[in-house]
Image (tube, rainbow, N blue to C red; front, side):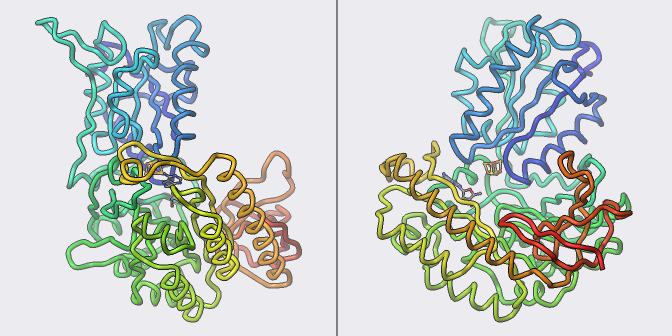
Length: 461
Ligand code: 5AD
Ligand code: SF4
């Protein structure tokens, strides 16, 4: 189908979260099956696909800049591989969030867009865009009417269960077990960009895990916008973890992210007991203040969050806890921010991703609450929290000195430190050890000899 228009060289670039990385692997698989060839640089490409993220304004801006670059600077002759203009397609969360802005805006010159549930239609969309005389996502049909090339329909059922992703060889494989989100936290665009929650069957996830273990992957990270809402044919996320852990060849299982509102006892029990399930929980708290948590519609209180982390620590003392925090949510006052500071000190997270609130089009917060915390205040708050977390991470990392862990070697030596190789502990801490004859995928028993805020140093024992 694509041969008659000779636009079959694809360059794909991915932004955003691990779910988007996984989706890109699905896209590669779908396109390879339809005889498209993936090329390693945009200069060789007929079609450039950007798999985009919409979570914060910064993510948008990066993509807009790239579109300009691709359409102009990087292709001075205006051309893809055959000298014809390169086709630019926008995939992912920006596609569903900003359809009108993307297609109507003449400055951006996008040729087509496809939302996260439309990837099976990509070959048709590319083909249609390639036949377009008029750029900017328009097709002039017989009767002079203008058609846009896009598909952003969100599905209640699409899970891509029948597509086996094309992964680069490695140690860790991403695996989406559910898609979408039903939570509607007021700041978050995901329910709008990715639609309603839907889960894949246990058998289907286990089957994919067996296959990737057969390809040499040793760790699988189960993904979902809200993994503990996983539910399929009577099986919950704890059941799924147990089933996946039975797959031979897989030595470690990670998952991200659960929601603090519904972290069940049964799941905690599996994490604590099952030796393949890593002792690390990423538990986004977002704020330590009850009024702000309510405005965010997180449906838990600061006290409930503290009770949950307390219980987790009792049942699984070696657990590593990490989190996400938003500063400068609309109307957040200084004393309310200080509640977040206090919560961070109380919980002592192993690490934290801290973000400035960014108003997102279409969200409940964008409709109800003016983005009224000044940028300078957001900056002060994020700098303050980052300092606290850095000191905390350093303190926690130093406490590991002298301890022994099994690390799974996950990364090749870097150019800066070619004599070191890096692996992760069960608690997701990066440990650098002298390379010796260790290789990717090895499990190495190490003693920790040094620590910074971000990494540990160790020696094999
Ligand atoms: N502004 C800032 N941060 C956000 N996040 C999600 N939406 C927004 C927003 N509008 C953060 C949350 C979430 C993480 C993935 O991104 O902390 O947990
Ligand atoms: Fe970004 Fe959220 Fe979409 Fe992931 S799901 S790409 S974080 S907007």
